[in-house]
Length: 303
Image (tube, rainbow, N blue to C red; front, top):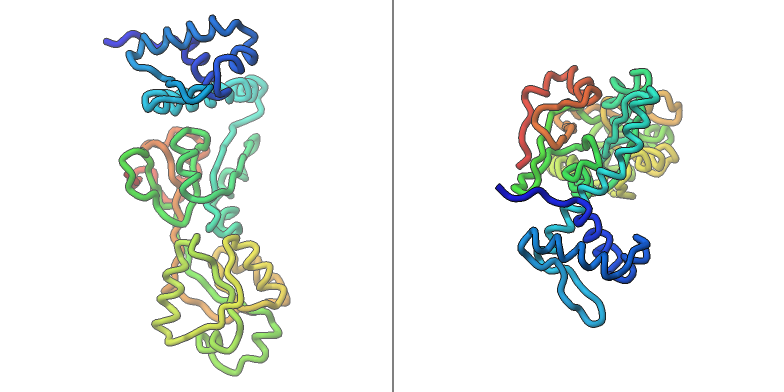
């Protein structure tokens, strides 16, 4: 059985790697350079591998050092979160839920998906929007409790991630009232006679939209493409063009007197997932998000 890691030695190594040298690390730690160097050497001896190599006038991580740094980063970043988590628990500030949102996910849908926890009292909800792959990395490092996305986590033997279906919603098409009034054709043929706004390839539904246009024999004039679905709807409301939106967004969009519903496309469906770093969800708020779908027991592994 291997000897347990000395976390003080690991911390000194981490600071040296972060600062890029022994002298800068010693200054940050307010210690002698020789002391810091001795602590790093002790870690190297316990692991059996060199973690640094000379690089010009400075030093660089070896391959073993890169692997050690990845683990140290995770360990000490989690440690930095500890005081806030303890304070929240001790002061009764309620449960904290950090959720990543894929940048291709419609914002009105996000609100719908998160409504079960928003209705809870004492919840502190932290929402982060980023690219899908970056969010999965943060989830694997436990910087996030879950990721909401319009696609399941791809197979990856290095990331133990699990995709839990949250539901699905068909798309409908909306248009500014002025454009809708000018159209003389029925839906969906009318889309050929007006500018159209579409999500970019960041959205999982974009390829299905392109295929749908082909099946309908339509060659739309694409006036704009947007990564942010809320921005897409904003430009659509301003009169720029017709646009697709989830059924879960219908009520809010139809409340805008300047918009008209062109038609439904039940064959065009968006799928939504909650991605976690564990198969059995332990966080009570995540359990609440999954409860309506019963998907916690039907998690599909994304690796």
